[in-house]
Image (cartoon, rainbow, N blue to C red; front, side, top):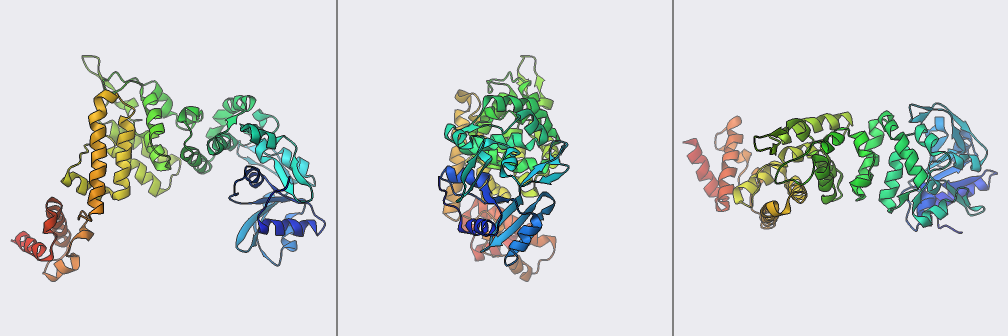
Length: 439
């Protein structure tokens, strides 16, 4: 078969092959080209050493990005392409990285070390497709199958477990039976993987829209979710235990990482706050606050970036609070949260209640959707809800003789008046309000 590869990758292949070396595009780019997709990036493997690669491409910019592991990045027309020498890894340390790398002269040996059959194919125009493990056939079947012994593959580098699920989510494939058995047997090794390697993997899995019930790794990475499945809810609003409810809300929300993480963690505080009254009804008072505290510890442990962490925590903190399509409430919350997060909070409320007793929450769902429409009208009509929307600013208030904290307090006062009555957002009326405030 003939693959239509990127011109910059072809330049590199031709240069190697015209100078007595072997070179192939390999891995994900081959997989995507066979599937008719445009690869995100290209990887090339060769029998040339890193030193020989840098010498051969000295007319271009080269970067020894992972020279210890045989990788050099060659940049052509501002396109970076990683070039790696044929290799095999030595013994893996703590299920995540090899203690040594041995360079090889054989493409066959190089391919045999790779994770899945669909990633273990190589190609150049001279040799065509090199497919030693029936990767193309697995692509046609929609199958994720490990190369070699699954138990050893996942023990070597446990991140491959998440990679399997990532491919399932991305391509809507299935994991081959023996491979899935090996994954489940080695799932506990995920605890040895550096957290910063885990986040990009689960982000792509979550955003693929994959059903959380198929994500067997969840309770390993987030043990508190296992406790949620043991926390029952004898309450008229709930039909399931906390874990089952959590999974439903996760599937209900749109495929955005911070929203998925919010739903995964929004009710974890219930495992610590459950009480049962004299009528045998369960309650979970202040569970939002406890969920916030527990989620913060989890997000810190996984080293989430601050922006994503703050979004998740704000949504968890407010997921159970009052919401209504009323002028004062909507404008104050738009001001407090900003447009994006306020609409995210509405999505969270809807996803949460859609996983409850529908008959009892149908009025809530209508109220949330009405709140969303109200907020959209406020924004569309450019009604004032932020200090920056006021027709006078802090500099003008200072010019009226105010200083320090008074300036901020006056701006807050003016905004509260304008939120109540948008017609007051007139310069003369605001000046009059300032004068009244001074009195």
